[in-house]
Image 1 (cartoon, rainbow, N blue to C red):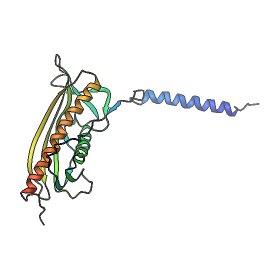
Image 2: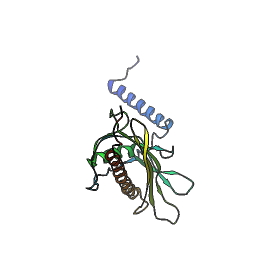
Image 3: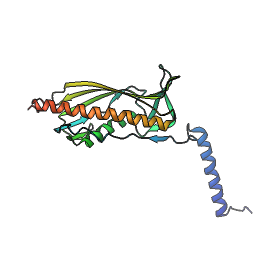
Image 4: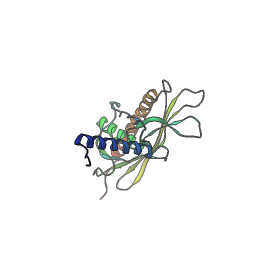
Length: 221
């Protein structure tokens, strides 16, 4: 007579089978055994000059353009002038251009000097669009040099609905890290980007205010 397995034996067989399937999958799926990366984020700017004027305009901040090497959630580092590498097991919470865009918008909001600011598709009837290009966003650890973080952005202010570029500038900041460890590098990133954000908000609002005072910020039609 054939003896059927008990319910407890059946459960044990099912668990063993599931364990074997998981083990097999880990051998097939790339990175299945990899430890999850540690995620890092940066902070928006919240302090601005008291003399910064208020503008009754709406602003769209577009996602910054960037090279494919920087359009990544991985934290870029250059150990040689001609190569771009990334820190292991450490990533931003978003793609670098998206992260910078979000922090720009939050910084404009924190300034309380502009009536409304948002990203593309937010439904704002923009008076101005801020176009940016992220040229540098990496740490540098060249041989014999102290670790540094380099951030460089190009900015263009576009008046709507004419789609006319009314002003352009660029900002570049270098901050030395307190050491080569990732936490120290992230701290340097936060300081460097904070300076970029403050300059970006201050420059943009002053440019909009200057043109509004001249009557150049009015909509036509």
